[in-house]
Length: 143
Image (cartoon, rainbow, N blue to C red):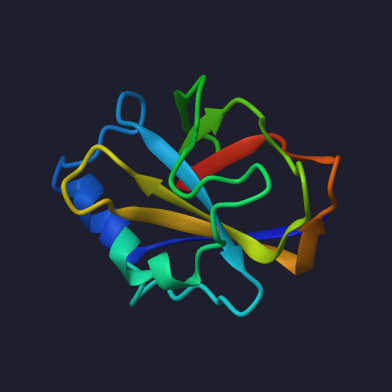
């Protein structure tokens, strides 16, 4: 499944203001409904997107998926920093989860719950009851 990633402008500001510590803050992932489209200018905080988040049901709980194993590296060859995180899995139980157009990453440590960015799926995806969805090779690129 192809993903398109975009960072929010507010995240860039919060990073430059030293409000965000990518390696040590609690970074979370939320699944969005199939009508959601990320806007890097208008989607600055969790409150800006909460109404488009999937409901807590069938194994998905809102604001509960935490990125783990976060490692920040400097990539001088490509002039950027990269935060890599462990794979994240979500299993549907008792019903289907979705459809979802993608996920939003946010920082749960800062007071405004800054949105880091979004990864949008090529098309809406439903996690069928009994199956597990895995976000693999999670990387957030800051350039």
